[in-house]
Image (cartoon, rainbow, N blue to C red; front, side, top):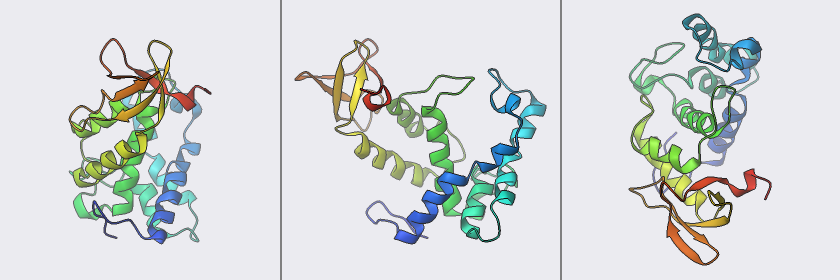
Length: 205
């Protein structure tokens, strides 16, 4: 399975990626809700319980599920430096499918609201990816992910801190968390005082 900056993945690979994205966390159904929904930092003992969910996912995906998908579920928390879990594998031992799933899993966790944290605006998360704030991910794949997400968010409606709805016109490659917004024909770059609150369709507008 090979990906490059200009080539699209074959359709069977895309289908596997979609399936892995849907089922990789199914093992969390075996984690007690009081741990999953704890509105605080987990204890070491609780985190060890959480760390079992990739194995549960692998086990819950029956034998008729493609093995590539099962392994993506098992290894989406592994790190290239070998410091992940549950198997502490490293580098090329981690399948490409698992490495891609790991990136999307981190992104989804950051933009989603949890019992212990607020959601983040996608542009802030992309900037964190660019700065390497999520260690152990495949840097080449992260670069491709960020590039594709930048394209995805152009022309998207966003709600601004002053309540208005604007449209993303440009995302500076060296300043991803300060996109340029067209708001009522006023085109300006966001800053600490005027910024995106959320993607507009997430507000129902």
